[in-house]
Image 1: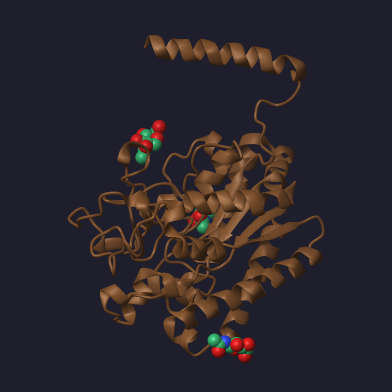
Image 2: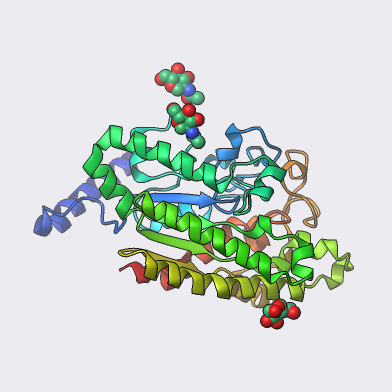
Length: 350
Ligand SMILES: *[C@@H]1O[C@H](CO)[C@@H](O)[C@H](O)[C@H]1NC(C)=O
Ligand SMILES: *[C@@H]1O[C@H](CO)[C@@H](O)[C@H](O)[C@H]1NC(C)=O
Ligand SMILES: *[C@@H]1O[C@H](CO)[C@@H](O)[C@H](O)[C@H]1NC(C)=O
């Protein structure tokens, strides 16, 4: 207790000393007043807990490295990129799901996630997994803005949405092995068309600053490697699937530049996660990883969602695994990816 008091006093003193020069400056130093998140399991902080789907992660061992070791619905052992971004940007510690019961006014004002695990840009994907489609996520966002207006008023609400950092991460669930093996480039164009539509809709609803994440090297996801039935000692990333992801990313980056040019006053920036993930796979020791081709949960070859549950044994140190389950990165990986984004992507908004 004494220690806590000591720190409180110290913090207050520092606050007095360092703030006297600019008393009029708002307390938060964030460039963005809020964070708004759309997409799939890479950015869903628990919306699927509230809907009827098999695609959930609100049970152990998910969340074992989260605050209080609590499963939250996040498909990882801990926090996700939007959580880390919200921290770095001094908005808040984590981004709650919009469907969380009893969301507080403060949580609304500083932003939420509308993302749904298992979802994609293509409606067919969402029907298969019975999850929240992109158009529905945008409907939820409309409801969100209505509540925001009730809390802070029309003018301030417009300012918050216009100033918010929007994070979009989707696409992996849309792309099947078949499409990648056939090098179906028309499907890439179909998805990119959707990206254009959705970013335009968000712009029309007032959003101005958006980060759109590209695809990971899909051929390096443990579950993809497993489908090729390589012997455990010879598991290798699938080259063609990586080429497909990479060429989609190149097109996405070009598409976003075009969209930004068309929407005046917008900043719509591509976030590359492919390159940093490949770097982690090629130089694991640099990141403290001992395992990059299987997940920490169970055998690491197939377990995810219901197969990664309280009865499934897990590895000793998830932070030394690139993948937490057979599909999703560990919190460590998300932390490194966030650092990469903070260095390469965020400066574009300044
Ligand atoms: C939500 O708030 C209401 C009223 O304050 C309370 O009765 C209810 O138990 C809360 N529900 C949850 C899930 O916290
Ligand atoms: C939006 O709010 C309306 C009215 O409260 C509700 O009926 C509808 O289900 C909500 N839609 C979404 C997608 O949350
Ligand atoms: C896929 O098709 C595109 C366009 O037709 C071509 O440029 C690319 O090299 C092809 N990729 C593979 C892996 O064959």
